[in-house]
Length: 289
Ligand SMILES: Cc1cc2nc3c(=O)[nH]c(=O)nc-3n(C[C@H](O)[C@H](O)[C@H](O)COP(=O)(O)OP(=O)(O)OC[C@H]3O[C@@H](n4cnc5c(N)ncnc54)[C@H](O)[C@@H]3O)c2cc1C
Image (tube, rainbow, N blue to C red):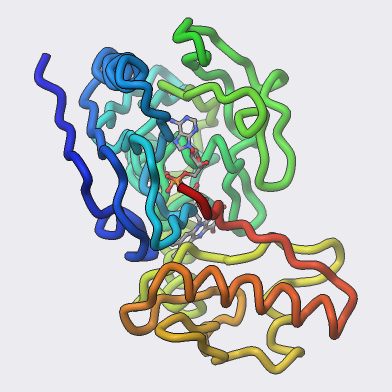
């Protein structure tokens, strides 16, 4: 087994924010066995590991990561069994939605255009346009921290808004099954095209970002609160609150990761001072080595 591993490599090119320092190792396993082998190898070296998909919701500081980042993007098999679709953890959500549409299966249209992988989406219970992963997740095969394989069903996933049990138990998703329904192929395609059009219209897709920087607070919208506080367009270094969508923090001009983090903190503090509402980052920030 020839593992693909880079040593002391910059994380930025692999993260959708295009910022962040170096990691001790970057690993790119091509199968579940290689993924396990990467973890075992790093344990032998006494190096901590972090599993990532597309890093479209993760931001590392400029100090980087004193461990191994294992990217799952090469684990990308999809299979369809009747009304069920199974996908390895590195499958991009848009490919998953397209594979479902090809079989006239409805239920995953909302995920079309979310730039994450199945693993990141299950971890985050990703959602958009009224749908979320919890709606169609059926069961998943996971690796426990002691590298045992276990199956968790939907009921065991503790799904809530942008959250699952994975943030507590440290399990790694290897593959997931989604229960869908037969639908009208034209309607499925039209819904997907519509969601993509809305994204292009409303989101600053021309700049690197991690999508919505903050979770939606109860009974309010983060973007509206940020705009109301006069922060639309506010910048620190190359990082900016998007002028197109105030809920997005973008890497406008070669931003330092630490400027992006400072801006996230500044926006959260300013909105709290002015409205009493504390915005919680939706982006997972890895602040310390
Ligand atoms: C332009 C843009 C638009 C976006 N729109 C949306 C949207 O509409 N809705 C939405 O919810 N999000 C959105 N996002 C955010 C992001 O794409 C989602 O949260 C996505 O689900 C993250 O997937 P990822 O593979 O990139 O996760 P990563 O950032 O790689 O990881 C996120 C978390 O998941 C964990 N993780 C990753 N893979 C696994 C695995 N196999 N097993 C266990 N844990 C794992 C990581 O450790 C990390 O904690 C958007 C982002 C961008 C840049």
